[in-house]
Length: 129
Image (cartoon, rainbow, N blue to C red; front, side, top):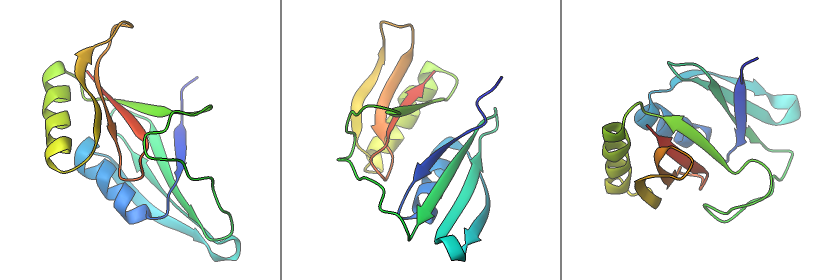
């Protein structure tokens, strides 16, 4: 068993896909469009496995939350950059580029070294070693 992909609604596929490509090295697939259903999506693939599906709709009104809001259900994605230095460097780069850093890099009680940042849509990301 493996986790195949996680899907996120967005209003701007290009912006979100560019973020994950620029900062996490995701390879962007082609955009799929179903005009009859008012639906678009693009898969992003990470080198070490796993994919993220970025989706947009014109026929539904997904619930919007405040950026970084803690809520029931899926609440964050953890992406490993492989080292503590990687966490420190990427967190500093994201901060310099204007992305909110909710929690600075640190060792956690459950054995991770991580920071918590927000993507352009306000989704919580744990950047882990």
